[in-house]
Length: 284
Ligand code: FES
Image (cartoon, rainbow, N blue to C red):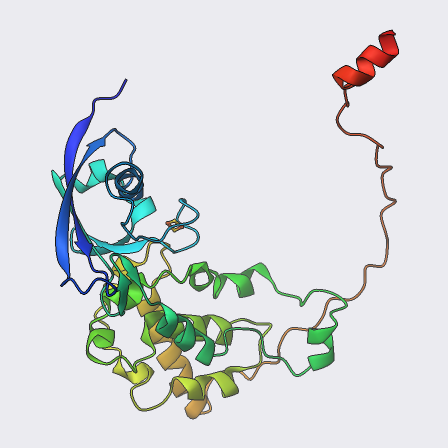
């Protein structure tokens, strides 16, 4: 069995309902190899203090719920091994640049509002096809590659927590929204750049990014929002100067000309054994 180490967890506590000032609470957690920071928090909630508030869901770096400031770096708690921190103390605070609701839980509404403002979906002239699709929109592997990396965003908010511009100007759209704006403008199936770009090309918009790069360092999915923002600026300038090839959104695929005969589906794929009552009846 793996050795157990006693690790001190220092956790930010704040409950607006009891009027107590924000403070840090300490807990000692028995840690085995392979335990994540989220495992430590769940241990505390299950065994030491059931009032601790922290968000989590998937426990596999997919849902983006468990974003926190862990030893002063914005990270996902479920994606951070305690052993890899190489410290006897784990200090956990809510992610910066968001309002705190309770303990480690922050209000992520500004993230989702900014994301929605940039119209993060395909915009096309064939509205009927969008509403009643008849087939997929064509896209080559090269066209997919042009934006694929930016589509890995899980909306955890870590990039906004790390961004020095968001820290000084809450009206700035932030790396998440700007990266997703570029992701959709770059999609060969989309024709919405002329509607989408004005949402970020404005006062306190994309030009406020100073390329600090902290967003890309914090992103747990390798999205590299800092790169997306620079590409977005380039796209805006080239459109303003009338440079670059005019393109139309890729067409809808034609219906297949040959159809494969359907294989017969077996009635049962798992052998169903008789229940004890049915067995008794058969034997009797
Ligand atoms: Fe879903 Fe951590 S719990 S990302």
